[in-house]
Amino acid sequence: MNIRIFVENSTHMRIDIITVLPEMIEGFFNCSIMKRAQNKGLAEIHIHNLRDYTDDKYRRVDDYPFGGFAGMVMKIEPIERCINQLKSERHYDEVIFTTPDGEQFDQKMANSLSLKGNLIFLCGHFKGIDYRIREHLITKEISIGDFVLTGGELAAAVMADAIVRIIPGVISDEQSALSDSFQDNLLAAPVYTRPAEYNGWKVPDILLSGHEAKIKEWELQQSLERTRRLRPDLLED
Image (cartoon, rainbow, N blue to C red; front, side, top):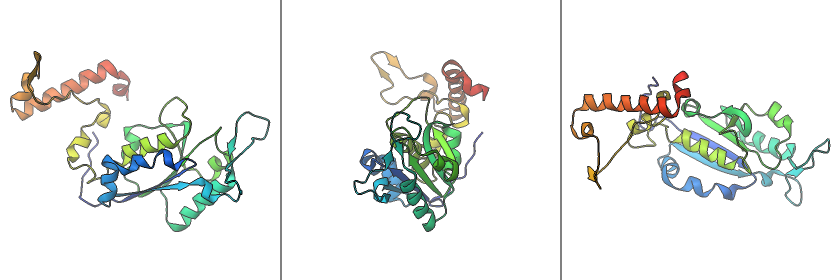
């Protein structure tokens, strides 16, 4: 079981996202929980336009690949320049590249990364990035699933959300975050709200009983049943 001790305002995280399309995700970080985390001073999100780090007069950051392969490849110089500029200003715990062939992102990884201080996310685009970046500057390669997106921006936003929301103090009801699906490798139990009956559809009687111990037992049983039925692979882990 994952046990975390929450201490208000004890954690501060900085996330820097390097992208060729900052407008794709800027709005995402200005609403809901991500905005709340920043307003509370628990997280900083900085988005960097990679085109600001190229010497090309047309602000191009891609070029044709050696070997005659199809597509365009993100160039090494602007990426190296941006990452080194950021690293000259502070220490980073991880420099993460979002890529379909990376390690699969899951709740366990989100929990681990939420304990870090500073993270860089490099968003892939076009056909990919010059592989020397992956060999020499990237410390962690992560995928959010076995599919290909137009770019890594959405993947970076998804991961940032999963990481930041479990930083202590971001969510007011901290126990709510600990009972989310995939914490402890279980899916969450069903939840209900008022009215207790609608169109003949009733809320389980146990949830109306006020008996806390029995409700907790029901919740665990439901989590186990749903996990066995929908995601038995989680129980194998």
